Amino acid sequence: MKLVLSLLVSGVAALAAGTEAKVKLPNSSADLLRGQKLFQVHCALCHGPKGEGQRGPMLTRAKLSRAPDDAALLKILEDGIRGTEMPGAGAMSDREMRQTAAYVRSLGKVAMKPVPGDAAHGAEIFRGKGNCAGCHSIHGEGGVAGPDLSGIGESRSAAYLRESIVNPGAAVPEGYLLVTVVPHTGPRVTGVRVNEDSFSIQIRDSTGRSYSFWKKDLAQVDKQRGKSPMPSYQGQLSDAELTDLVAYLASLKEAK
Ligand code: HEC
Ligand code: HEC
Image (tube, rainbow, N blue to C red; front, top):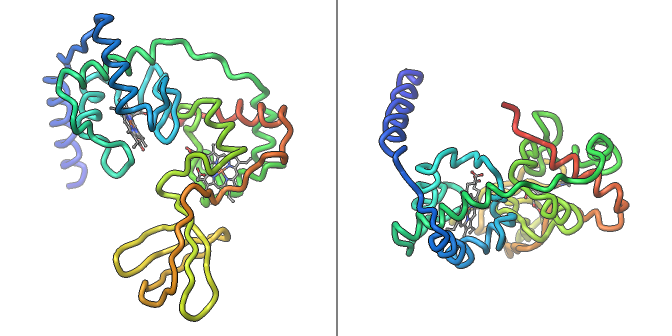
């Protein structure tokens, strides 16, 4: 039944994509310039002024995993991506969305600079000296306290990766909010917020242990925005080691 349903759904999606495949993005230099301005206003905050990536992934890529064609790209701009920080384009007109989309596509046509460093040595630091694998998985191997990094090289620039290692607080995704709760009785607990509603909050500490609290039992809930559960490696790794580590991360691609 599930299979039939998913076949049906993908069939409908293919049909929809088929009819929308006629989407044509404007490509005059005036349109691109307008798209660039719109991008600065609506997108640069999360994707960086040149699309190099910040809270949102870098967009200077020939292929965007969630926007394989222009119809899909327009749909993302219009509706956002549900369950993520990527918002829908609220106040933009249809024409403005197309101009912005055209600018996004132009970003992908600029050749990427090769990332310097010795990726093989970086892989050793990742598993050894840096103990990064204790918290991060790559293709199913490693810890789960931090995000899976299997395809990180496809969505993050070298500059962003370096910054993440020396200054992890710079861009902490919503899913890794660090909180400290102080119960009326019993010890305080610090960890990553896994879930929260009006009545309760669930936390996972750095050892992987999970806690659930009723809010009525808590004297205080302290949310440490801008602070990462990941330690900074500033001064822990040499400049050459950092370069090799970044080269390794930049080489990671989602297995096809
Ligand atoms: C509040 C932050 C934020 C803003 C503002 C924002 N984005 Fe995003 N965007 C994200 C995040 C986060 C993702 C990644 C979502 C995911 O897949 O987990 C994303 C994903 C995308 C993707 C898909 C990339 C891929 O890898 O396939 C595109 C394209 C995109 N954004 C374009 C835009 C454009 C164009 C604008 C401006 C109109 C914009 N975004 C504004 C946060 C933002
Ligand atoms: C104690 C666990 C822990 C260790 C050890 C750790 N990390 Fe992290 N890392 C995290 C958490 C949690 C996040 C998510 C919060 C954030 O972005 O600051 C993260 C985020 C990241 C990101 C950003 C991912 C993104 O898409 O924004 C990168 C890159 C990264 N870590 C690489 C590394 C590398 C390389 C090492 C080893 C030198 C390392 N981490 C060691 C827990 C850890």
